[in-house]
Amino acid sequence: MSACRRMTSRAGFTLIEMMVSLAVSSVLLLAMGSVMVLAARAIPDQDNRGARALEAARALEMIADDVAYAEELRFDPRMKVVVADRTGDGTQEVVMYAVDADKILTASWRDPTDRAVPLVDNVASCDFKSENDGTVLTAVTVTLTLADMPAEPFERRIALVNRPAP
Image (cartoon, rainbow, N blue to C red; front, top):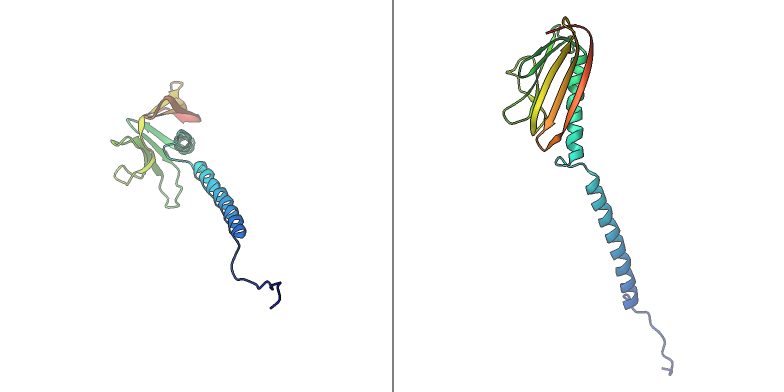
């Protein structure tokens, strides 16, 4: 063998190659973790005030849609809305809106014994007020107050045309 040794190829990575690959992997993992945190913050939380406000607005919109097409309205502690046949069975649809004992605004169809569908929970109060000019019902105002947002009641006034007063 000569004084100059031949370099033989060795299997494996050098220390510098390992350090560079570790640094690149760390940066990629941190970037993916940041994306996951941002995505988790973007998903609405049910305890979030914005999500609660949206839930209340949806409930008021549902009530407003039913009231706008109502053929008959009745108010007692709950609101009873009778609308034209929407299911094709030839009978009028009856929708009852009320706050139950668990402070949940619910809607039930047909009769009060049907299973009620929860619309908004943790409701402090839900008031239904009718406005009339003596003989004709002119508007219905629904005010929904959530227990966790008492200073910010949600209100929806639904104007009606040519309806007999209840």
